[in-house]
Image (tube, rainbow, N blue to C red; front, side, top):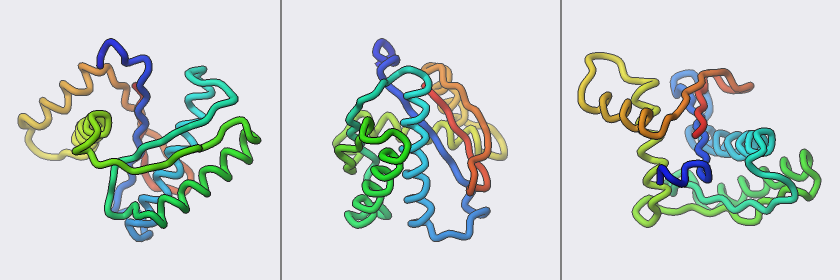
Length: 159
């Protein structure tokens, strides 16, 4: 994986649950929508992808992402892409996958866990903190904190 790192891109958005008044399902939908829209913009701005482009997306299977939510998310992101990029960027597939069946979803879970640990852990350090630091160091991740309009707190990193 380290040899092919230039072909992988991971984005991370976190919201402090205590600072949002939305139900968790609505928050999860909004975060995925922001992630896809801003992730595509970042990939285009950085030159990692160009237009025209068809995008296929697989997200981690979650209880709050049922078929209705996925369909709504696909429509919302598709409309955002159409507004911003005409028909030059199209979301052709949006699906969920269990981490049990996908090494890349497992990897994203490990990375998300490491970043979450670094951003949120309070108290004495232990082996979990060491493991989180190792993941970040091995993948040479850069953690950037910043605000996202409409959300109270956020963080983002890029591989």
